[in-house]
Amino acid sequence: MNQDRVAVVTPDGTHTYADLDRASRAVAGALLGSVSDLSEARVAFFIPPGFEYTAVQRGIWRAGGIAVPLALSHPAPELEYVLRDAGATVVIGAPESRALLMPIAQTLGTRFMTSVEVLAHPTRDDLPHVGAPRRAMIVYTSGTTGRPKGVVTTHAILGAEIGAMVEAWEWRPNDRMLLSLPLHHAHGIMNGLLAPLAVHATCEILPAFDAATVWERFGSGEITVFTAVPTIYHRLIAAWDQAPPATQQAWSAGARLARLMMCGSAALPVQTLARWREISGHTLLERYGMTETGMILSNPLHGERRPGFVGTPMPGVDVRLVDEWGAAVPDGAPGEIETRGPLVFLEYWKRPEETKAGFRDGWFRTGDTAVRENGAFRLLGRSSVDIIKTGGFKVSALEIEEVLRMHPAIGECAVVGVADQEWGEKVAAAVELRPDATLALPELQQWAKDRLAPYKVPRLLRTLDALPRNAVGKVVKPDVAALFTGPPRPAAP
Ligand code: MCA
Ligand code: AMP
Figure 1 (spheres, rainbow, N blue to C red):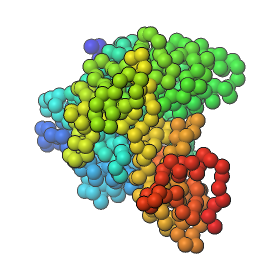
Figure 2 (cartoon, rainbow, N blue to C red; figure 1 turned 60 degrees about the vertical axis):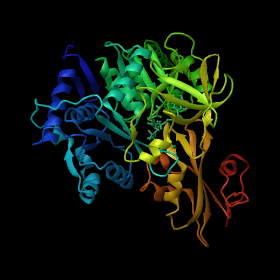
Figure 3 (cartoon, helix red, strand yellow; figure 1 turned 180 degrees about the vertical axis):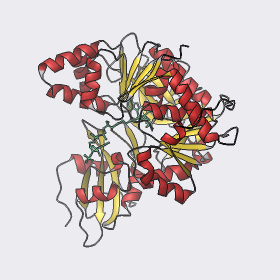
């Protein structure tokens, strides 16, 4: 491979594969110090999407460590939870994160290093041999049970997940990806960053999503591949609609030169797909995956992409639909998606019971329901009402409820997802107040944002005398959701 090829482009500059090799050997040298192998030590990192992120991620791997990406938007309690749960020995942060991370690191006895410091370290050549079965990454994802769980993948699993995408979507060295997703989740990390780098293509990385910047980059005609969540396409459509006609024309003309635009992480509304086709000329390729499984279903690169469908199994992936007892359902009948094969994660970090519960006869149970029609899968929903997808982020209603119960005005509460055009679902909280307490949404949001990631903060609030409950006193979530979609009810005094 020609090391002078461009690997990463950021607003600050252009970085070749040789630069990436050098920088990652520097990071590995800084992390290894006097040892020869990190031997799966967890190294967390809090770095904006860009070249430094990429170099630190590789450096951790080259030193034999497990990379634990942290979310830039998370407040201290969420970061502390991840660092503690992962047992991180080191956390690498951009210099401006020192004030946020240092106190947490001190509490936990974790070493804090700045990205500047590790990248300036002399490069190291005697790096350990890191075999495919080694653990490589832990990505935290919300589940039905309380706090987020660490999804562990090995180098072999990452390789299989990347290989399937490269094959299905025909990644080539002359591709240029535009990446505008956060890099603490699988969509951005795997589909956005690692797939293009695996074939020595170029990844153009934005520090954060911005609709006008994305359109300008499309307008250049240089971008060949793009991937995003439905909320991002919704925002891009809104930005296009507001632009002057000449700008619209230039943006659309450039976008047409791309070879592939993909969507996933949440259901793509058919109207978004249709409108995007009108303004960009692209029929979005919708695919389905999970942090635990990589990408397992995809519409075809060549051939018909059916609106509302997520296609057929990715290369090397087994997918089946089963009833509640694990028996295969016939075509046309709804069933839970189960999958097996080399892409499936190794384990939930330090949670053997939950790992075991996630599988049935060697098949991973996704919790998503689908139906197969003429060979292609159509998603119907999730088996748990307590999982909410908002802006492409998966959040746990139970986790949010646990935090909200700590609010002094809240006696009891129930959190649900409410359908929304822009966000897919919005986080909504129904609460029973304590005697004589009052609570307004802005006040609740202000309180919650110090404790929860921004996308877990409730966007809707109803205060009630009593939550809807069944005969045994259990809160009935569909009835709670109806509070937000039905006619407005008078608030509790
Ligand atoms: C942010 N805001 C929200 C949400 N997120 N409001 C409601 N629901 C949300 N989910 C608020 C912010 O706090 C802010 O409020 C206001 O919206 C505008 O913020 P802005 O900065 O414009 O929005 P943003 O923070 O940029 O978020 C929009 C986004 C983002 C770019 C669409 O949600 C995003 O990057 N989503 C991608 C998620 C993702 O990568 N998922 C992949 C998971 P205020 O102004 O009051 O502060 S992996 C996965 O699902 C699997 C593997 C798969 O299949 O891909
Ligand atoms: P995560 O845990 O963040 O990896 O999210 C995985 C979940 O995202 C899946 O279990 C699905 O519920 C959802 N998801 C991913 N892709 C799609 C899609 N194309 N349509 C609907 N839901 C999706």
